[in-house]
Image 1 (cartoon, rainbow, N blue to C red):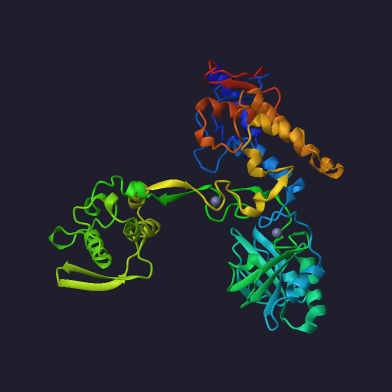
Image 2: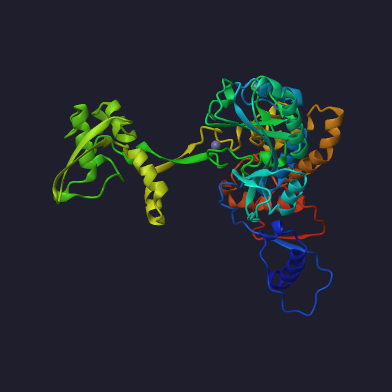
Length: 498
Ligand SMILES: [Zn+2]
Ligand SMILES: [Zn+2]
């Protein structure tokens, strides 16, 4: 009775009143077979199934506390330059102009107003309005179009739209026109201007990696005066590892990368190259020879290394590196027996690991992907060091801590840290409500005995009991009162009085 009727009806009513977020934990139920039940509290059953195995899901995200923390960083975070560590301040129009005037005379530049950055939509009206304002061209997802053209934009995809404000060539007398154009871009693009430099040469440190077609983003909001790095206005999505605007560009917000692992490819270094290398070149040729044998013998001959009967651990490391990671530009003479006789070719050797990497990326077969994954291990992403966010986002601090350092602390410590923040009057006003929400939710987690967890903990690694208590705390956190909680295993310890 308790479960089938009371719970079913209570839950059905309750679910109808819920957000879709909460609903995903509950699953819908049939209306029970009774005429009507009165005086029933909404009911929630919280079982011990562990929450999502999705590597993107953490204690912070499932409890929604991370959403409030992102908001907090966006509102009162202080950005520092990820390059030199200096506090980031706003850039004036004059500073931007001075900056551009330092480019070599004759450099061609385009002044763009980035009006849409990574948002979904069709933007028909928006583009029409710009055409009416007298703008002629725009760049949509990197492609330049005329505003009078028929423009079709997939409204289900995220887009970048920049209005082309001006095109000019750097010379001494363009200062006033440049100033005007920058001003225009700032006005339309919410204090941002994107300057595309065609065939630029620059000695500034942040430009190193973008030598072909340099794009400089300036912000009237934040920029480092020394490194000339500009930042967009802080926003919650900058702190989300599930959003391309926040995620580390290399691991895409996962924090680690799947990589071919030398120790899995060569599990036993007492064996020879002939029988010690897994997964590579298993395809057999004539007379039972393998492609691998052909490659190894030709490379060994090229470098004058004996491999027959020699255990891998006795091979010169430098030679083994050529086998594992390739010969670079060095060409090797390969020779093998095929059905058509002796075949010869000369080429560099790609290397066992790059070959496996490439095959892994190229294969369309799940079976093959699983096969290659047996030789891969998770390694920490070196770009973000497992922090999942891009470096600009990690350079934003509240007090002395960035968002990753904060979420790596235990729930008790976070609560203590946030309660002891020294904030200016304005910032206190801005942050008060958000801090209250965070504090209440952290308290719920403490109430159910989870004060030792960190918010960055992957929810897939929680025990069944911990996951259950998290969901309980999340439900309490959603501000419900008078709810009847039905737990499937009351024997499990909770320190809660609720
Ligand atoms: Zn700097
Ligand atoms: Zn990363």
